[in-house]
Image (tube, one colour):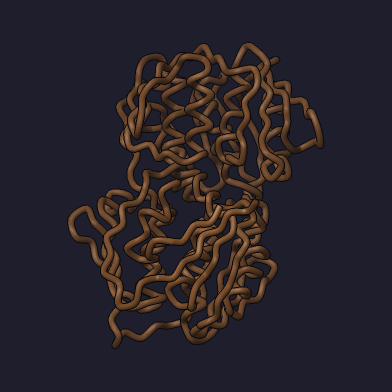
Length: 428
């Protein structure tokens, strides 16, 4: 039987402090770098979501990681050993990173996942690894999971890869590049979407002692070695979007402790978006404050979000409460995320009373206040579940079906957000 969470936010202005988990995007990169380093690294601040759990489980099976909570010690080595079968479940980033790492192993690894992950495109990554000499064999539909990966005649050199599909493909290849003979020069064909995530990959790699040069549409990584490092994973701006947009939907203030340490993440673009729509944004030491009073006017905006596409669900819901026409553009590629993050998001927003139209590369949102009661599907997508729950601030109530999908990145989402959304009535 399907589970559901009924959300009725408490009345009155917001006055909330919400702690968010560490960045799963940073954590996944740090865990891979630590695994490939020659020696012992400690990674702290790791969130407990499904994405990081997949990588931790894979490393645990081969005895390369130990720890608990948000602190894990990784015993790295250039001699790569992975389990024979890795079940990535619904973790897209983890499946792609581990597929690339599997190309370094001397044994064969099968990468698989749940049906929603099997439907997501992987062809560009598989083709890239094959062109570098890895043996990549589909075990089902070509270009999708499951896939068998082994080292074969792996080598470095030059690689051309499309930039308009998923930055995760580029990041996956970048992470293994230092261990390839001769290093790797990656030529990115066309527009690079989510450039900030490629830059994040470079930043984490550099923290582990590897030099990465990014110029225009070329990424160059010399042959070398990762250095064992004690690494701290800062709070996740992608997760912080959900509490921080709340003052758009209802007056008041929200503080996210420690988030100012994360302003180099691409999704920190959220702060400028909130300023543009009329919120007050302030850094208070390491904390970030967003607030809006009764007299503050809200403004519709047009946004190019190709470099911060994970913000789209939270921002779209917030924009639907701002009178006038807003636009989100440059994000057509997010149709191939955990869900169709344009079509599915728009459909569920309409269920909540929003006026939203899907375009080739984004959304047109004609904002107005909504007071309906609604039940929304999550489409196996954690970010849709979290974003749509925010309608509890402006609607009579919102019922989120299959709310446990938030476990992918923020298992404690509903508990941590109780100061904004109240304590949901959960029915299994």
